[in-house]
Image 1 (cartoon, rainbow, N blue to C red):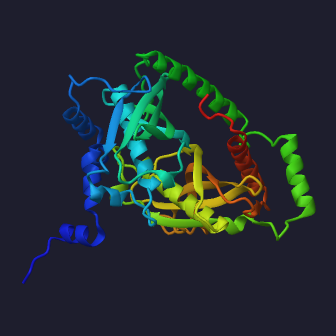
Image 2: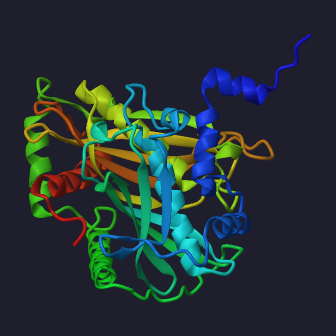
Image 3: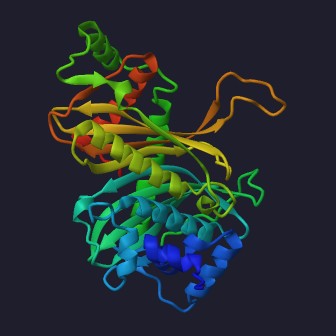
Length: 398
């Protein structure tokens, strides 16, 4: 009789050895709590080690993916078409930025992701190399009383492939109240310039929040657009109903998706959201889309392990002339129809936990989407604003 160790069998059958390599080269992904994370950081960082700089900026945390020498690791980051898979990298970005936030906050602070302001892709992901080493570099930009903005860039062969901005809030160990974080002290002129730019981004975030269609009515121009669309009706030759583009999935939140605090890891939400948005856009456009930006991403509440987690992706806007599509993704937790005690609620109750928006490049001539309900019209207009930023080149990093 032969005894087989199941972990080894799983690794052989499903090529999971690369995941172990990933946890080794990015050990922060394997930390179960903040104490374990700080122990990992202390073991991997020498007090005498010189500080690292990138483009004159002071680097807080560096992560290295040694693709050139680790074939198993490449499999984790390869998509079905043997190109770079962005989903795991989004998990890494969240982990790297969270580590930088915890390092700066210090003590027993819990640092919670509240928003991903922007993810801007500078080189098409299809051109990222899986046989060349890749670096993640986190850069602290700005601090408020309890909040922090941290950028993470992905660099390969000295070129910035992607740039992202994460916003964190520091809370006490119980997570019930905010904590004051140390003020940011720029070390270089480039650090000071980044702090100034981050301050401007804070102002822009507040302006956009105040002008959001969730709290204000559409502009006159936007009302006229909707009026003209509904007066003429949907053109079935060039438009399809927005509802047709909606795709959803449900699953339990598993233990291997937990973060340092016992809730669902935000990076997993980003990965799942991006991949669902990509598939939804592919099914609409008929060809694989190219990500340009991820923007206006907000984490509204924490998700408990064991929750029923629902993701819903929908094409909210498509500019056929410019070849720009915006996929809106929403995440929910769902409660069953029958509550504790046997009271029938009638419908499964769901509560929104996060929102994500992805701007893609699609072929010109891709069908436009036609909103029917009021909710769809507001989603259409909000996505149109994001598309216009991409079309006009409105800077997302002032």
